[in-house]
Image 1 (cartoon, helix red, strand yellow):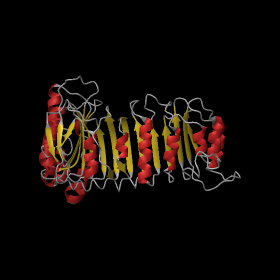
Image 2 (image 1 turned 45 degrees about the vertical axis):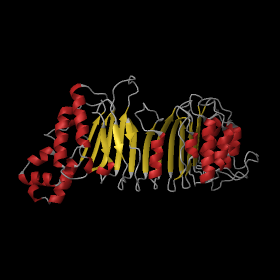
Image 3 (image 1 turned 180 degrees about the vertical axis):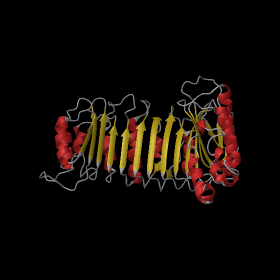
Image 4 (image 1 turned 90 degrees about the vertical axis):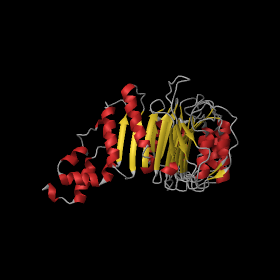
Length: 445
């Protein structure tokens, strides 16, 4: 009966038998065993090379992985995929030794040797595992659409330990790539060619240093300047010195999402960006080195210059050593003044008072700000594990102004959710009020 199945239907069945992870694959498991059932099945399995063009290895220490056996299967898998475009994922967060290290390095090397066939590639390992100085020439990967490379440097690595780097040459145009994710011990070519279809970029960039085996802030800007159609940026930007080279100003006309995790003196980075179509902005401080006043001033400058239709805003300093003692209330209010279309607001780690809450009260007669501040908010999140001066009565009045008119009657106001995590705060008065008003209240208690 199996002989009567149409080849296309049988191939669809074969594809569903392919394992999602090659951690436990061998020459006796699918799809290898499918090619041993009969002559027609073997012919179909070998003829349809796309059956072998997708592979993944997850080595996370949770499951036992026989890397020597996986290496043999990986080699045959690559050979049977012939000239098909490759989709491959290799992930390991462990430092290997002995035969396992050699086998894993060979798997990575075999995959790098097929750069000309890359289409969707993710390689995530630590910089002590793979063999040294692999060079990736993106102009040799004409079909590459998605590239993720993480060559992580373990936190417990001793200074002076030998580690390996990945060198990437993007000096020529890469027309097909739409997503790029880079981090760790990676060196970039001095110039970056045009990336006309790149719309999403993830970057872990560190301060420039002759001894640094990491991407620099300048590398980050190379990508921005070479990708005119970027829509999403996710970046962890680290600098331990204020002496960073001059950054050129750049306008990103299509950018919709900007997420920056900042450690250090990088306020002038924001000062170099103009994002007139920005809809989502997430800024997080990673440590006390961050200078919140200068950073918030840079955000204000960027927003005043860009005038974007911002819908979602998160300002997070909760990871800072000074979380809860950063008194930047006036600056945050000014940021909100430049975001009249805001739908979701999240402020974390800042010292706030009822002055801030009153400014959000649409019925307030306060002179803090003229006009309604962010009248279309649907979600408000305020988190402060440290000191604050926010009262339950002030929050209640603010919520009431966003669901009722001045007569206390229901309106078509937009507020739907309020998230509060405040130290020593009286939540009970708000619970019943929010329940009756149709507002979802999420608290730390």
